[in-house]
Image 1 (cartoon, one colour):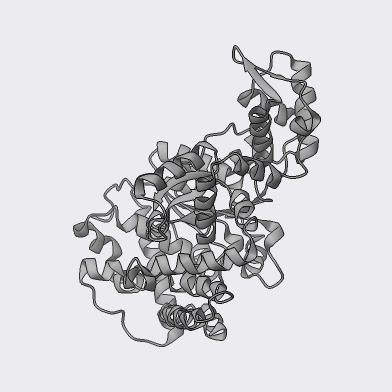
Image 2 (cartoon, one colour):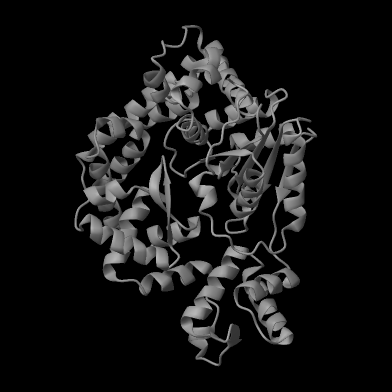
Length: 466
């Protein structure tokens, strides 16, 4: 039963990534491809870390490999870390949930084997579904090792019939328990046909971040690789520009690409945003499939000082209702929940969908049905631009509204997101002092949950905040 093929749909966050031209990434993609082939052929499981600044294309590069491997028969599991951590081991909880929901109940038990009670610590719905007993009692260190070993065994079983890729995004926001589990998997997967892809922003790894030690430990291990992405050069920027706004004259194209490259340092996200801005502002116009740069007022055609200003200009073109909706969404986080927006009131479900469609058409939001939310901002920079643009007192008030709306989804939902509720209520206490008690209650609940999952460092942080 364990060796029977299992087809898991490509995760929505990977499948929904806009298939922009992948200019200038042939060499790093080849390195990812080589690591995948080595793992898929059973030579040795491996880990590839993809590093670089925001917008440089880390997620896009990993998604390109995942989509190609999926087309060849591999399974892909996806998990992301959030800036405001939702729960210990967040990316692994997310990818585990996506996996077990695709396995029939009669197959799930044999695939989990004797490790079901341990894995149910991370995904409690497994216990209810299979009527599992509680995990055996033992000292804390042994219990955590059993949890890590059980997860490794489950992933190894999934990889026997076909290769498996674990895609872990935004590890610069990973907590210590997540990194400890990643360390265990990086070294304890035996002959699993498995590749771990992990992205992170190198500039955001502060002193003491647990990922720094793991990267140092794995530096000399031949089963692990680190890909550092830099900006596109002029030739690569020209290829990108030609693919999204074809020009009729090579000289004009090279001149424009060189100008864009100098202003953006070759950051692909910045390049795309600025090209979009020029199209919308009239600095680029299209006729017969060919784009031309037009003579327009300097203020309209000039490249703004930063891409944040480009996003802000796009926000100004939206209706007031859509801007208000995006502010409410941004306070939730980069990923946000439609039901929470609905509970905040002010618009009918149909009206909310119309406003979200407006934001999607503007390229600021995308729909991503998954465990953590219904929608997400198209890029972390877009999310920050919206959030940072909210007036301070209004930000605190919106945090309170979001928390109330989350509680309105029921006690089970609130318990699952205790850490996030604590953070929202702590922020809203600035304008609603009584929310301090709510923040305390959910912070303590999050600490108790972390303790049950052997995420001791997380538990300590929650209790200290209490």
